[in-house]
Length: 121
Image (cartoon, rainbow, N blue to C red; front, side):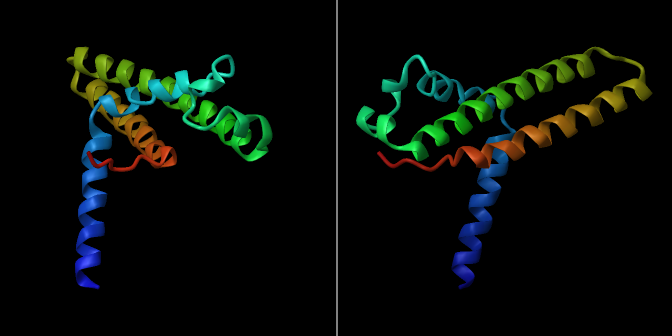
């Protein structure tokens, strides 16, 4: 039991670190292309399934909305970070830093919804 808890703690810490990198949100771009309504065959699901299964279609719609929201929020995080780095006045700089951290936490909170998994090669 203790080993399981240590593994879970380590996995949570790993996610926290990876989600903190700027590239995490940008890794959703392949999802956006795959879930495009004009290119449904790019999804790694048989095209016959996408025609028959309302569950798959609903999942792709949710995924498209999630990708769009993540990309928009990522852009806001980048803009807030750039503004924070340019400001010299301490009070304004602190306010921008707090806004940046809040947006970044919101963005990182979205990543588990993508259900990223470890892949083994």
